Image 1 (cartoon, rainbow, N blue to C red):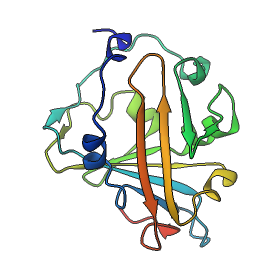
Image 2 (cartoon, rainbow, N blue to C red):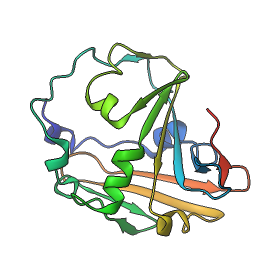
Image 3 (spheres, helix red, strand yellow):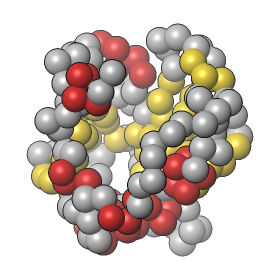
Length: 176
């Protein structure tokens, strides 16, 4: 199956709400201890079915630094596009800071690409936590209230995550 074959697949919004609970899936967090939020923490709950991450995923000889993500889609926060073009500050910040956590084990962006997560089983009820820094201008837009994060693409189904920030999930210390 090719990536483009997924375009016609529709992801039900009810499923997205279960995987990304509106009040429990998005946090602004302080990762450097200065008392100010500098990163986003996304929590996805596996409510669909257990699955294994392949031991070795052959994605070919790809140089991530040469890929322009804007050729594959765009990310919008409350309708405003986040610049993810090749070499942009946003994409460089995300690549440098992105961490994926599963059952207390941390994987960097490079770890994820090199297959170091391979062989892990994501059981029903498991959380996958992704933490990454965003430019201060976008972090400052994540104020208390309702927000929407949307991924639009010509190649895969669009995904829209609605979430609400309250005093319980805004400007929190990063605890994993």
